[in-house]
Amino acid sequence: AREIEADLTEVLVTEAEIHAKLAELARRIEADYDGRDLLLVGVLKGAVMVMADLARELRNHINMDWMAVSSYGAGTKSSGVVKILKDLDTDLTGRDVLIAEDIIDSGLTLSWLRENLESRGAASVEICALFRKPDAAKVEVDVKYVGFDIPNQFVVGYGLDFAERYRNLRDVAILAPHVYS
Ligand code: PRP
Ligand code: MN
Ligand code: MG
Image (cartoon, rainbow, N blue to C red; front, side, top):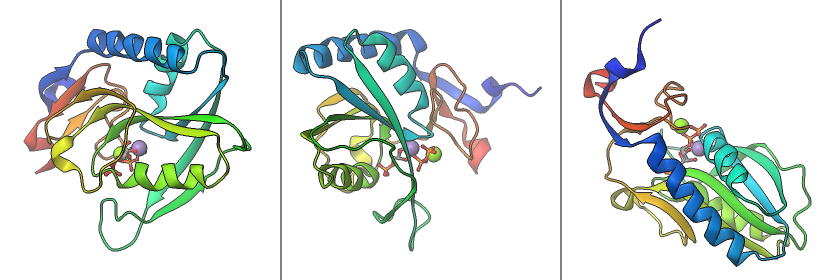
């Protein structure tokens, strides 16, 4: 099989750094939600790794649910108009919801999602995003738990894909230009 490593220029964040950061975020989350059952909402497919590792770091009771969304409209990338491809199974009334995301790029997906979930009567809706690209922001999103601010480069791994590949890479790395140009 072709090796993933040949497609990367450098590792940006290692698996060990990711796990240390998720442990740190989990301690804050446990303290903030002391005694309240959390509903973790993962956004397919990028958030699969974050959800799996963050959930196992938490020592509180949690529930997990999933949404699949796709942006559509004029542009190729997020237009801010989002279509629900798979909705939650859970009634959000009175629930404390924590959205688990891999990355905030333009912010359009999450700003839409937060409003959508808030409109369902949740007691609270907060966001945990492992990565954020401040230089790519089109809308400001109030993110309570952020792992790493990273430069506006093409990063893959730990759930992040390019053309549906590289999600299985354990680290997060910068994609080599020859792959996408
Ligand atoms: C990626 C990423 C976030 C979103 C961030 O998902 O996982 O969900 O884009 O971009 P934004 O801040 O510009 O909205 P993508 O739509 O690629 O789907 P995927 O999770 O299945 O890879
Ligand atoms: Mn995604
Ligand atoms: Mg993607």
